[in-house]
Length: 229
Image (cartoon, rainbow, N blue to C red):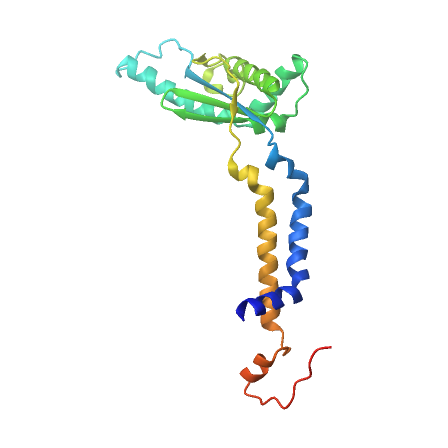
């Protein structure tokens, strides 16, 4: 009997279920292709060591010399990692790409770049769907990092920071996250579940009486029943 009642509710409220589902499906159609054939992504990871350029008399201190050098290296790495994520660094990379014949927007370059630092090791991450553009951007980023830091850090006194790449530029494919592949289907599922919720709410708020059982549940006596045509 419960299944019959459920089927009756679904048959009455099908449009409330179908409408949100269709809206979600329409919004997800442009990205449905990535479910079957997701857009590939590629990454370049390059690690660096970095240090401030030596200054005359900078080691004339009571502190142990190697300690000062390593501490200065950590400070340089932390600040360079922060610079990699800025618009100014993206502009430097964009200018180098333009000089090489590639027109790429500053925001597009900035979206490709991420960075991290641990002690005296700086790590540059670049991610894009075009492997050739990614390689060119990585090479431009390395050049900007090694040659243009003095324009943004007055502490360097006009000399670029000493930056040494520890890795070569290697473009590697990234696996597409399963959540990204299934995102369009999940949106349709959310629309369907939302439609079920609307149908349940409409049924709950509907004051209409449609069946014999509903009348008997109210404690009313049934005098006669007209059969359906």
